[in-house]
Image (cartoon, rainbow, N blue to C red; front, top):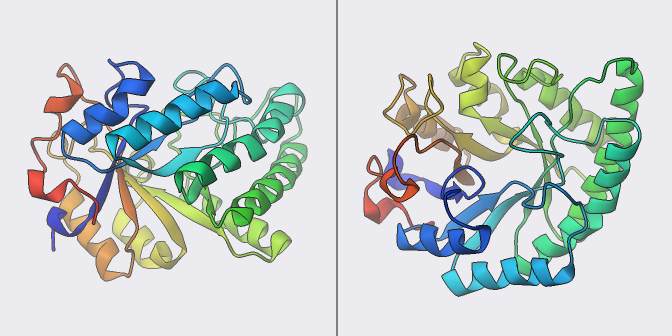
Length: 279
């Protein structure tokens, strides 16, 4: 057990960001990783030119890296936004315009997990109206994911850093997962279990794992406090990942932490080189 038994991937939207996007897959490969994930890389547009999509696909292929997770368009991230799908008006429209674009790109690189960030509460908007819009859009996203043989992920964030985001408990995200699956009948909506966010919310991560490991489609980690690499905070990350594995989770574990003042390539000294390639 331990880190050597996990299937890790590197989030290229938080690590190696000192490099241009198209150079990050090769940098991850040089650090020993074969799997990567991304937030939607084009924060200004849900529908980038095909040439830019092709260039990213080529960069992933040339590096020998497998994209294992991709966010749908989520607004300005990193930044003030936390998703677009529950925001009435322009942002919801942009999310819808992105659904098939993101799904087609994921299919072109063999990515089978698509993350749909829910979006913040909006001043003056009825939360029930936002939730109804969210369900409508998540159903569309789940169907697009199913078309390419992928799962749809719903993520809990943390209230201290995302005070306007409504899904700030494991149960809140699970409730949305259940509603999407009930509406589609597809069963492909899953929980994105982010250990850092759950910890920041004060949840007992072990209890969440025991309750929802079988509903979990992807895992992300960072230490707490600080959102740094494992070992920089106080979370028992190795034990928690062992608990996930013992509960039957065999998917990827995304490294979604900050490198701090170091170059990203130096932020993996906690993980033996032999444990970096995804088996």
